[in-house]
Length: 404
Image 1: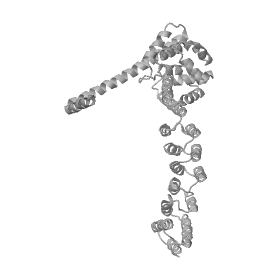
Image 2: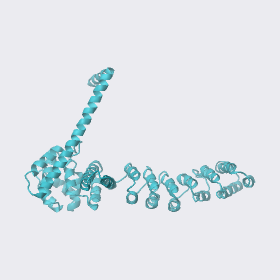
Image 3: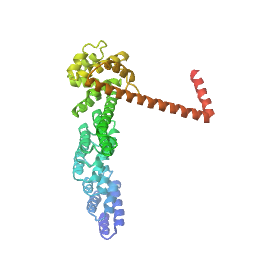
Image 4: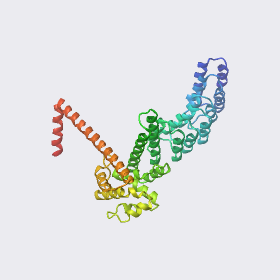
């Protein structure tokens, strides 16, 4: 009877009053001990109010029921058909919506609805895959930034295919801990290509200079990703590089010269079709037996073989798996390779020496930058001690306690 009186009153009340009354009715339905007949009438009334011409009424109902597992399912489904923020509120929070409901809503909804779905906690792989396929760019950025969303690898790949030019999307994907190493390499290549197009278009660099910088930047990222990830990351990165035509002898050589041979080793496995254990044994054999056969089976140019041989010998001399230099390229390994290649003759030899000298200059700049940073830090610390002598006393006391 009370619900019927409410509906009669709602015919003449203004929008603000109707919104307030609708919220109160929804709250009573969810939290009060109503008789069964009153509950049925209240559900009917709330469902009818979804057709209220005022968005204030519809939003008031959505705010009241969006997060409740006791809300009438038919009411929830009616609210997600509402355009704008009413549907988005329910899509983002309602625990009653199934995966099928969410996939359908993503397909027919606007960008706001898709972003609301992408925000849901613990989003399932099926819904994430649907958004990756049909979601707008803003929805993809939101999805990538949802740390609890279960996004399959193929869906991440699809997101990059569709909107890889989006800087916010690339940043959100790179921030995810579950982004596969191969896709990190794809994104790095996209960023490098975008920067190259920009600086070339602005006339800041020639196309040739820009292309070289992009290649070197992509190679540094690939080596770092392969070295710093799981055992399975290097093969995945190599597969991406080979598919995109970026797996070059120069990149493999950079991996060896950085003292981080994971990428080069995975590349030898991929190119030679030999078992990983066999390739690992050949590369770590200090006598170098079988290395020439491995090189030939991988199909690498004969002109670059002396550089590879010298780099692998230098790695074995210091410990093949010891780890790389903080500065990137290891100048001690580079020095051995330069000595081994300086007596070579011919155009190809000149090209190799040019590459090695550019790498040496790159390593020298990085070493100088790191040393300059260290000297600046030391100077800043000295100034701090000079301005605060008490700090020096505290440090000396700390040293004495540690020695004791």
